[in-house]
Image (cartoon, rainbow, N blue to C red):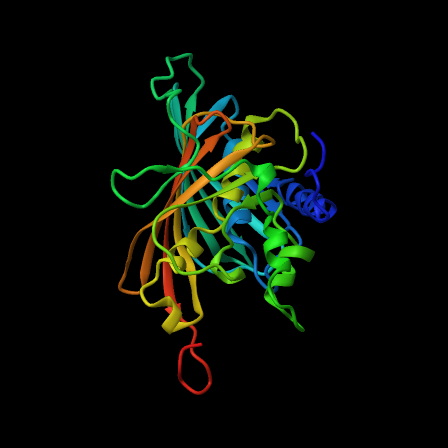
Length: 320
């Protein structure tokens, strides 16, 4: 597959993917024990949660050969730092003839960063009862019974780096990291996220995503990379629908947990559309949901994330 067409930022995206793939090269250090590094930090001083999800799924998959991952349920415990190695411990909770369950703990300096459960099924030939050729690749308008709003073809939409370029830059501007240290996937969207100038809104929002090059045929690797990408913008979709966002100003927060169900294997070096919406924003928390479909409209994965939301307070005591 060729680099992202027409993108001036293709080398940076390819470099980020190379860094992520190195972070997924797990070094065995004992029975069901691994050590790994981190991809170059897109977010200074901390490890992106999607990387931890991918590493947890990769480690669990390494202990369940010949099986297909069906779900990952993870709790983010503590933020990690990219400068130090990550220790990964896998517990074989169950090994059956047709299914397996793994508990995975990612640690840094003995402190847990992420706790996860992964479930697997033996590959069996069954009817694809969820296939629905009539399903359009698009997002709902946010109005019950309303029309389907197509997210547009990815080739016609700005990349996340192009949206970042439109944000006024200055010394240390956060938008620069999306250009200089972009995600390891190509992302195209018709509406910018709130941290790049997107307006408050309700209803669903979609973005297209794919790997910038082929990475081989391993279903486990494609699943891990999909888990990585599933973490992007779920917190932002909650921020987008936060009550009185314009009055509150800037929001902060972090992910509490992340659930991912994989309905069928996919080739993540091809385009997928991730449609997200905020199910609830209440009590300083938000629940975001995403559905990931391939180019043909087939449902590949469903994701749900619980996030903590709080206004960012200035030194003067007011929200900024």
